[in-house]
Length: 491
Image 1 (tube, rainbow, N blue to C red):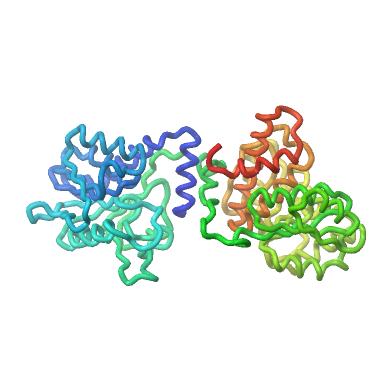
Image 2: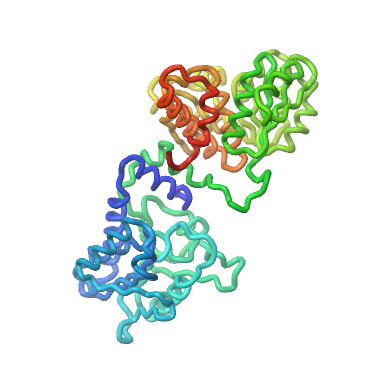
């Protein structure tokens, strides 16, 4: 199963791997044509009702493969408004090949029947998995006309998902808030690459077509993973997360790197909870941080209630950078995690405590391979073997793991992602603190696995941009200012 958002990410990742979208569209259109052949004999009449995006583009290709059928392609809108280059190119091929086409500018003028006779097959290719909200015109009227034609005896084949249906839920999109919710009632659905969660609830035969997207597009992080990060222009202060970094004592740089990285990764507000002995130094690194100092040279159980109360006001906690491994500090970590129920990114000295603690908190652990072994985790040189072993360990642990290495392994025990960005210069101290902070910011608005995968990808991209600009000798602070670049969907 794959959700609509994840499918969009995988599609973009496939393009980044070098798989042309045009080839995927060719495969998609061919798959739909095969379905039409299954339901109707050569010579049957087929009407394809097409939108102006890639869903319509798939059907433009379908029409070319139905040479033995009486085909008509109806475009909802003007050809010049077709939204993607590859869809437009396939429309141009239809016209050049003199395959019958019609443009429908006014939904009221849409007629699916020809001379009063309904077609044998109607292909619904108006909208794909990216639908949000109830259908608008002309798709709403078109959906009704398609359903009327189905009632008259036509077979309806939907491309990827029936227009008006939420692919993740199987429900009519917008129906809960609108009395006018409408969707195409399909007999058959040809969906691509993998099944969509909501399609199984529909009274339709579903075919999952392999269109040539490689497994690597799902396994490896890529630019598609960044697609969901765009901010709503109407958003307000605080909607993009508040992060608390708990650390410091023996080290002052580590919590500061994490906190600054969290800001650069998009958090609206970042606080640092650290011992008073280093609070002034931490504050001196950046005026953008809010620093709360606690008595003593290290954090200990005596600080538990205050920090737990402070953490409750934040969307995510980054726990461990620069914390140290003094016995009272580790006891503080145990007691905090045992009672906390929010989201925590656990890093550095706090990591070995995790397997000892029964917690209801949502943990994202970010060990390097040495720290993973301290947690009781596996060791393997080959990243493929390591990925399988880490996934099994995460399932047993019950938490999300981001294991840092030349290939970062990210898993929650069920799903697995691997990140290949980054370079050998990132073995320098502090880059892991930057990563923890970035993941903490992303965890305020994303699911744990996604936050970890995106954080690893963006942190590695920031490191690659630094190496390209400066060459050897990068330092952790170089990555922080390049994190926004690493999180952009384009360079």
